[in-house]
Image 1 (cartoon, rainbow over the protein chains, first blue to last red):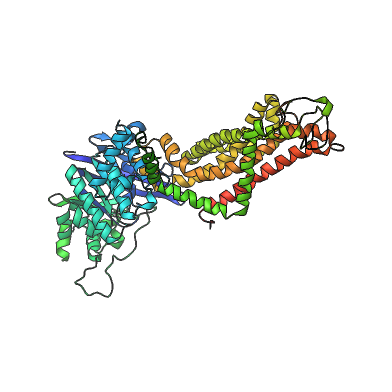
Image 2: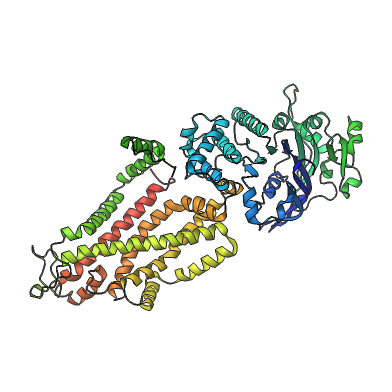
Length: 329
Length: 305
């Protein structure tokens, strides 16, 4: 917990559906330190968004339920806080940007209206003062002519502008932690670069920690200090960015990195990891990756791997550990 | 609406210009809607009818040639003439004046009922749709009970139980109309609830009450307005029916339904007595209905143009 802003311990989340119990998260451990940008990568459906939403207790119950574990934010367990306290934390201490900038703003109100609303939910300021804060925030996200943007309706803005409005809005109360759930997936590449740049600059300047969820490894390499890799509802590896890209420890991570096409290579077929992502209703026993793992051993089939520290700050949840990695190369 | 700081004190045109700039989109949208409505003949017809009714109702004290409750027994039951455009009733009261004053009453009933039922129904529906689960079940099942009776029958029973008076008739009709609004808004709220800006509001720390009033209800309002227009027509009809059977407006109030009720006895020999109030009910209800229909067509982006 030393210096950790957010500490997730042994978190399990399940969804009770007609088809069965979806074990979306199983025993997830994750820490976000003060001032760092932590990337969370993984395939679609591996539980990244569920993790993000459970931090803010946004999981709809039913069908979802947080089965166990603790989410310590500044030492307080958020899972036991009363709803009123939780609302004070949301937006004020932790806020979140969503994937869909197109629809994250209410279409029937002006941008200014909604931004002021967020400011005034947490700060006792007059409308005028709130307005001023909004203009400042929009200037900080490099919005041209913030005054006129405040008067516009969401549909009058482009996707990139809307996402910048969202960033401005969510940072307006100076949260300590910002959860960004694939904030640039819906944007095209140039706009994406711009938005990421602003996000990086603003959060670094304010010392805001960011939990950055994405499936784009390029973005991770660019932006993040540390990375956590998720597979089928579990964290399989956490490492500083350099270490992860230089010497990935988990076979899944290696598969992911190998699947990134490179311009230099002349390949007909893109590399991929054999097999398919397991359904989370009846996940494989032991290590969840073992049916697709090139380095699977006997114990992988029934024994859950424990964490092995293979380098400074570099944890791998694999029976093979690092020795295997080297042997393979 | 955005906080337009009241700067207009120093510069009267500045305030207006500011307003125009801030609401440019709404103004454009408003004129576009008007344009579409203008091209829609039934909208125009409905609008003209509603406007003339509203005008007649407002101007009744000046337009009406006589006091609507002044009795003049010497002129009783005289047929339409230049002195009495619609003739007179059995107490010699001028029917034209009575019908005009009746427009005031009927329109007021319509607006009050839509105000009460629309307000309560919208809140109930939004809460049911947004909260869901048990709350939804309880609210909607209660409203289903109301809805399972024919609205006129239930309104009659309620008005009779409360005691015959115009006020009680309004309350009864409003109560009957609540489920119509609630069901509509609930459906919309179910869809709105899943939209990302609701989640965004939640992560910003908004309370459920805040979300219902600031995000759910505003997004349902356009359909509420359409339904409201249609319900005004229906309300006028039901309220007149209540008055017709003596459960609404009491004599000597010049209510259309009450006038028909008395005029019915004279229908064979004095056709004008029941005919003119009836004609006004017919025209008003048709006006609101066709305007409501046209409004729905125009406001629905999927079928407009």
